[in-house]
Length: 118
Image (cartoon, rainbow, N blue to C red):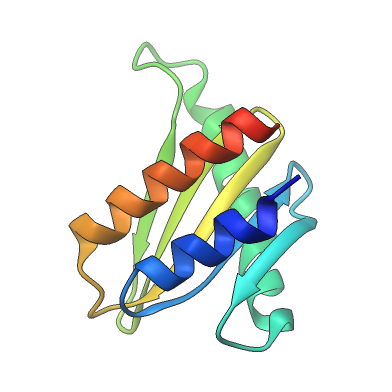
């Protein structure tokens, strides 16, 4: 499975991207690619993947449909968290200065490719 290649292309295509990680339903890393210590992106992935799972569970009772992705913006960084399938999530960590539209475009392309691989 070419997960590493998909994540590498995502991170390399997004100016200001720090890293991307594919995590399972428990927040465990399946594959990551980053310009940082791999521990750091695994830590981010574990916690953010769990956040998406919890949000999806909470939102499941509403009439708005299923949550597909979440964007978390902090003072220095932006996290995009998206659903690959019910068991897997993709997390992209970028610097705050990263162009949001471009990041979102490449993130959605990576999600589509990962969905085909799983």
